[in-house]
Length: 229
View 1 (cartoon, helix red, strand yellow):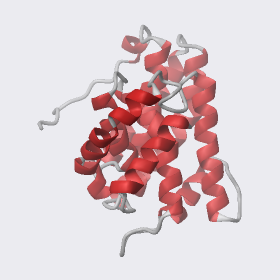
View 2 (spheres, helix red, strand yellow):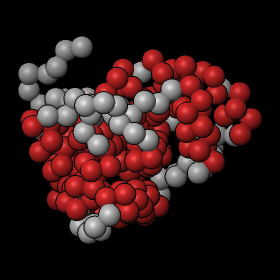
View 3 (cartoon, helix red, strand yellow):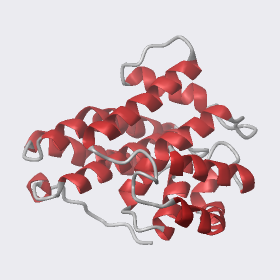
């Protein structure tokens, strides 16, 4: 894969972007930043960019979805997307992307929507399972992120739950589906494709940077939760 030598951010070119694409790609920005921050490959160079990007995106995504002509909001989201790229470009992403890549490959879902659906469920999984040896505890990392976005709770786990709740609130506000069922995937199709979903997700490169192990039956259970909500 080749990286560009130069990237030009021209906010006015985003004004015609439909609301649903503005919403789903905005959720992808949040997922890029969150995944990059808790990745097994996180480092000093990725952390600052990821933290800044997620705060900007959570602040400005609802604004731009309420008023797509708000040029400042679009500029902030464009900047957040770029900053998130600088962050996860140094750390890679993680579980939400492994899940979303699989769902997007199997079902007719845009990339950002598939990732957006996966993000809260992936964070709940990571908060409920032990990290691999030598990996920073995702609960502690996510609790620090929660404080950055204004969630003050002395319990790290409760702070993470509140952060997940904040993400779900943003999804509702901008009109994005909260589960695969809400995105139009039938139960029959979901169960018929389960083996394929698990197989693709297990081989996704982002599994190698996910802080907790997730494969086999655990991965199937997670996809089932993603479907029913």
